[in-house]
Image (cartoon, rainbow, N blue to C red; front, side, top):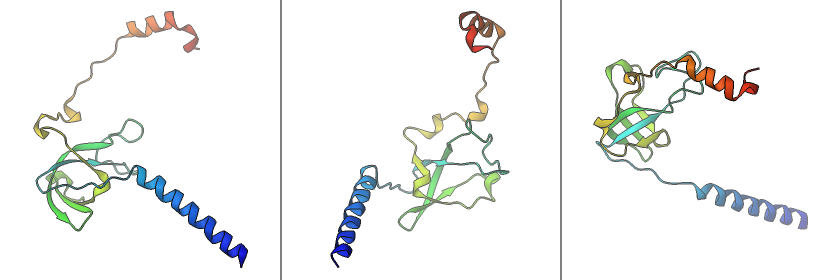
Length: 133
């Protein structure tokens, strides 16, 4: 019986430690109707709704307006017609509030990146030849 009591006490302390660790970074997120939020995406293999996959893929995509709160932790978003196959209800943990005016956000597709010249590479080869083996 003493060993059982000791095991129960150790389990209780371990659980309280775990609970204190999880509560440190916990924050309750709550949005209102008509708020603008970013949607966190993680591309699945073979499905590319939001462009590139892998390291350079987007983490949060364009702002969407909240239409309705569903329960305590879910929100219905107003999605564009091209996303008609996506279910519009999302859990609060994959939403991030838009700070500022959503009309000033530039979509990633419209940003043009100039092509790099070979001059920079030549300078790098001169300065750091050990990197180009």
